[in-house]
Structure formats: structure tokens, C-alpha cells
Image 1: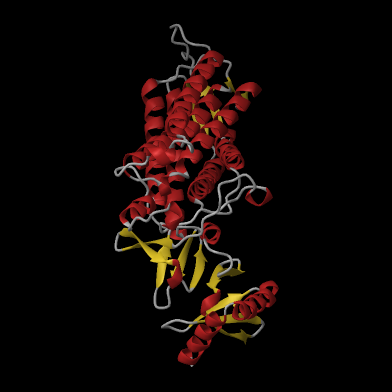
Image 2: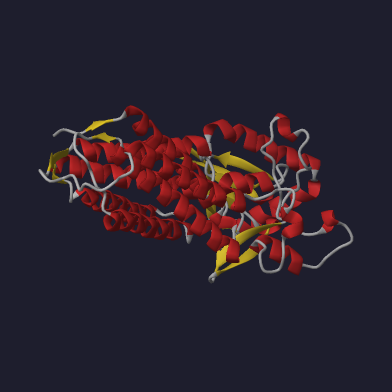
Length: 414
């Protein structure tokens, strides 16, 4: 018999997918900045919430199927399907949050997670084996696999994106509809043939009641994770300890203290508040930027930064000799830098005005030459070349010593 649905249960399954995805993504985006126990708790919370979102959507979606015969859902395949989902989601989230989100890492993680969701669906379908015989259309099976991988890639990219990420509610909605699309695509290619002795004669829950119970339990579990792990901005500064503090804060503690908090080496605090940050805490420019090298977090002084180059959701800092990996997005780096000394000349490049030594053209492209031990040029957007030249010229007039240093670098470069 063809598969038909109860509309309100279909809607409930999509809502549960979006709700669980919102909680899971809210926790996953915090993993990159967490350490120690909190990092493990965030990973566990994101894994359980995303797995619940996927599994609950599939289970409620199964209960939404209108059947003219009694169905007995076997317990073992149902629980096994959730276990498969939790394992692959946890492995994929961990893989994408443990290092730079390269295209290869994202692709492999999406295939792992998508394959797990695909397996979870068809393992869960075997819970009906005692009640009906199923035939799956190969075309729909392949389409559901493709959608599962695409949805997984979307979720992992959103969970680890650092800049330019849409609001989480939109991200969760996109993921929820993608997972729902995978499920209902697979079900569109499924035909059920009930067994003559499908009824077991034993008391069973109604499908509506069972769907409501599952939805409430999933909502409560993800809600608990969300409330327990949601950061409290008012308590965070006081709650920092030596064992549960971010690498940047530990580094500040290790640097020499001074008489005033404003005199301490800062890692910067930008603002994205409306109206230019009116009513927000005062903006502090960074004196150091974090880099990752030799398996640990180190810091480079802002004075040594020649240029910053965006690479996906991360950046590379050129210090005149080497390109150093920085875990921050270019927008985050820009918000921490003093805009009187640094300028964004391209969507993917920021430069130190003090290190500019010349300009040149390559075809239709404008380039700026930067001082360093190695030859280094940075592309400049056409809309920014005039602003850049004006800023460089004005900096010479305002600070003659700066102009003298720049002329010295030009002579040394030549």
C-alpha cells in the first residue's frame, strides 16, 4: 500500500527537527573556544541534541504514516537506530571542531554523518518487519542518501563556521527541513505490504500519544542541555579559573601584570552592537593575536603583524617572515585591531599601514607591497585603493616618524 500521512504529526516532526538542531548548533558553535571539561560537555550536548533532532524527526515521521493495520514497533531496531545516529553525529562534530575546516575534512565528515543518518533511517524501518513487508525504490534510496550527506555538510559547516554565519534560527530551520526532506524522500519510495497476522493482540499505545511522549522527552532533554551549558555573560569573568579558562585568558594571566587593567596586554574586544556600539562596553584594541603552532596556542604581538589573510573560517597572519595559523575569522581579527593602524583592503585581506612600501599593478589588479624579510604583496579591491593611498599619505603627515620608518623599509626592500 502507498504511504500516506497524518498532517499534524508531519508538522510536529519538522518542528522537533528544527528545535533540536537549534540547541545542537547553539552548543556546537561554542566548542571551538572551550577547553577542558566544558569542551567535552559542549561536545556531548551538541551530539545528543543533534542526534535527538534527527532521530525524533524520523521516529515521529514514521508514526505520522497512516496505516490500515496495526503496527508493532520492535524495541531493538528502534534503540539501535538512535545509537547509530548518536555515534556518527558525535564523530562528525568532533572531527570538524578539532581543526581547521578544510574542504576535505568537511566532505569526509559530511559523508560519515550522512551515511550514519541514512543507516539510522533504514535500521529504524526494520522495526516494522514484524508487521509489514517493505519494498524500497532504488531511485528514492539514492536520493535520500544524497540529501542526508548534503544536510550533514550544511549542519557541520554551520556548527563550525566563524563569520558570515546566518542567525542560528535560520541555520536550524535549514537543517531541520533538509533532514525532513531526506526522511520523506525515502518514505516516498517505500511501499508497505501488511502481513495477514500483523496484529499481535496485545495492548499498544496509540501512535498520536506515542508521538507526543517522544516529542516531549526529546524537547526536555535538549532543553536541559541548552540551559545548563548556555554561557552566562554576567558570571563568566568571575567564573574563570585556572582549569576552565580559555587559552587567551590564561596567556593574559601569565603576562606581567600592571597597575591598571587597561595597561595589561589585551587580546581585544570589538563590538557588533547597533548604533556603533552605543551603550556597549568600551572597545579595546588587541596587543596580541592568538596563533596555533606545535600543537599549542601561542601569541604574536600586533606590532609584528604585517598582513592578515582569510582562509575559509580561519586566517593566516604574516609577520614578515612566516605565515602563522590563527583560529579567528577575519571579521573577528578586524574587530580587535586598531583601525588607525590597520585597514581591510580586500574582503580577505587586512594590512598594517606602517608596513606599506609601495604599489603595483598586475593586469587589471591593484597590489600593495608590504615590508618583510620575504617579498609579500596583497591584492587591493578597486574600491579600496584610493582609500588606502589616502590613509598611507595622511599617516605620513600626521606622524613624520612613521613616514621615516616607512622610507627606511622601502630603501631596505630595494
